[in-house]
Amino acid sequence: MTRRFATVLSTSSAAEPMTVLDGNWRRPPPPAARGGGTEKWLLIALAVMIFLLSLAPLGRLVWTALAPQGQLDLSRLDRLLAQPRVVQATFNTLWLALGSTALALLLGTLAAVLVQLSDMRHKPAWVFVFILPLMIPPQVSALAWLQAWSPGSPLLNLIGISPAGSGRHPLYSAGGIILLLGLHNAPLVFLTVRAALRRIPADLLEAARAGGAGPWRLVFTIILPLARSALYAGGALSFVAAAGNFGIQAMLGIPARMPTLITLIYQRLNGSGPQALPDMAVLSLLMALITLSGLMIAGWLGQRLDVRVGGGKGAGQSLMPLGRWRLLSESLAWLLMLATLLLPLSALLVSSLTRGYGQPLNWHSLTIDNYLQALLHHQAIRQAFITSLGLSAGTALVLMVMALLLGYFLTWRRRPWMRFMQFSTELAYALPGIVIGIAAMLFFLPPLPWTTISLYGSVWVILAAYLANYLALVLRPALSGYAQLEPSLDEAARVCGAGFMARLRDIIGPLAAPAVAAGAIMVFLSAFNEIQISILLVSARVQTIGPMIIFLEEGGAPTLSAAVGCLMVLAVLLMMLLLSAARKRLPAGVLPWQP
Image (cartoon, rainbow, N blue to C red; front, side, top):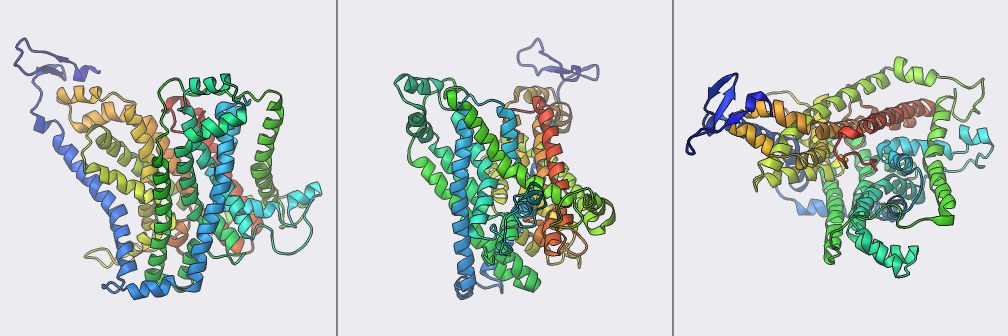
């Protein structure tokens, strides 16, 4: 505790403690003057911001969907939802999400068991590479796969195994969409299941091994049943992420003429403009219903059986030694990374370095003009990069302040009604980004109250949608950081008469800053590459870099889009390495790729 907050007790037991403030002995101010008013007004301001950013737009979305003319019209809902294309899009959304979830559960669970329980070598490096696809924008991953396995792939031509034929690309199919969605979401399952495996008592597994249980029996009779809740939770996360993944569904589903709800909303809004918003609000609610139902079903399944076990030391990382199979297992694990990550990204890099798509890479076709064009000469791309950087930085800074304050109130000044504030942030994060985008369009399309100014089509609408969507992402590590702090430090300073702003500056802020900063950097990463929200909110005046990949690919500039994709991957990789270098200053569990 600093000298400013040093205290001594008065000789009288009934007397109030004396305080050293600025070198003088003084009695602390009455409770009303110790920052209580400041805390109250800050809490009110946070509640108003959350209401305007999350609850009010979502409420407007529901009202527009159910009563576009001011009156409830159920017959209109029946006609819209019964349209054959809507029915087909709903079926495709469910089928693709369920299929990709099954693949993600298989890959993510195998990876979690291998990393957490086996004696595999070089685990941190493998986990970092396995998590990387989750951080790469899905539209970039889809573009990399398309360019890697097309007949004109420069990389496959370079090594002499280019696929023959000039028919439709094999990834333009339900199987291709499921494959890419499953690979993209497998890290979500991995993170959830690995956390559950860490909590399984080691003595339980050692007793099973001593009783003669082999590795497979150990996995299927003890480990997976005890991790059942985590499997349901990971499956739910994968299902929600797959249903709302615009990048992969648009890049593969639109050319394959396989509509989903998210691509149907995008195409109809592009074709009809704001006039289609009432109908698209209905489809957005349908998407929200599908994703929230998936979360609730997974939660119900996870609570049906009590699989809790007693305390004890968590499972170690060598309970299932691979023995003579270790070299083969490690080779297969790294081969999977080569096939699913390095090969597509290498193809993307090779494409970005050629003068024309499909040309073989040699000294005559090698060029960096695509990168120069993207960074220096193409005004739309350059402006999109600048806008995305500004939006990402602004979102991270604003949410860092909000999470610092919200984390304090939710952890150390918790009230029953404040749970609703936290629920509001989690709801906005759980919903697909395109739902948040349509809600923001509806809320900000009319002029602001008492003015003729409309924010629609401006950068401020995107910023507001980002703030609503990503608040939970920075709040979670903030709450984790506060949970590891000792609240008596804040209480001691409060008793000494320090106001809230002084405590925030000298005690709360410095202690909680690492966790909040880590969350803010994760927000910066997510917002910089975001596409689901911005694909609906960009305009001729305001462009972000996320949708630029799709615009360039649709415009017939594959090598330029490859260069932009490589630059986005490079930005993600540098940010992840920066966070990894600072991991010792961050609370445990903040970074998803931490061991």
